[in-house]
Every structure is written in structure tokens, then in C-alpha cells.
Image 1 (tube, helix red, strand yellow):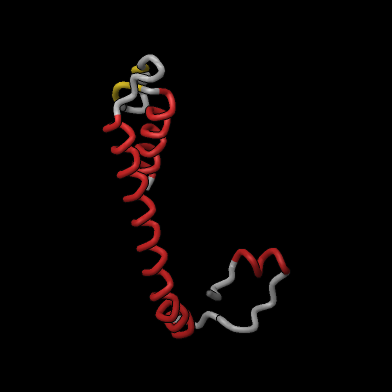
Image 2: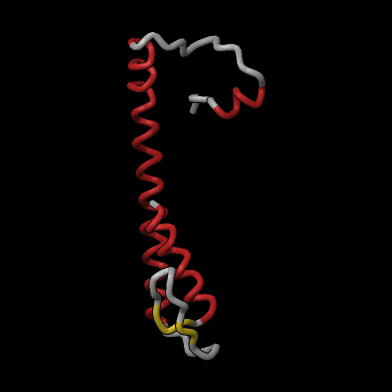
Length: 98
């Protein structure tokens, strides 16, 4: 996920600044004059962003489908999954309800 986030960040920076190419994070971006940004640069960023959000959505759906299995496995392992006494901040952080 980190390399995807890094790529998205580089593409976003490239699109905003009009860079001519995306390089590694350790190399400076090549910057073009404003207005010289090619349409394919924005299409590439758009495609990358759409893929990212699709992957996040699929991950969420998988997690939602798997929550019941997780709860059952926790019960089998001796974890208490109901009526746990937590303060309000902890309740928010550890909520398994959808």
C-alpha cells in the first residue's frame, strides 16, 4: 500500500506542477512550463486514482464480509466480544459494528 500511496502522491504532484515525467521519490521531478501538461498525464493520474479507490472499496467489502468469521474465531479463542467495559474513546477505536 505504501508504494501505491507514493505513486499516487507523485502523480498528483506531477499533474499539479505540470511535470514531464514521474521519477522515484529520491530523484527530483522534471518540471515543465505551466500549460505544457499533456492530457495523457492527467489520464494516467485519473486511472491510478480510480484503481486506488476501487481497491480500497473491495478491501472494505471483504472486511465487512469477514467480520462475522473474525468474531467467531475470537470467541473460540476465549476472547470476550460482548459487553466489554471501555471508556468512550476506546469504544470508538475498537468498535466492530457496521
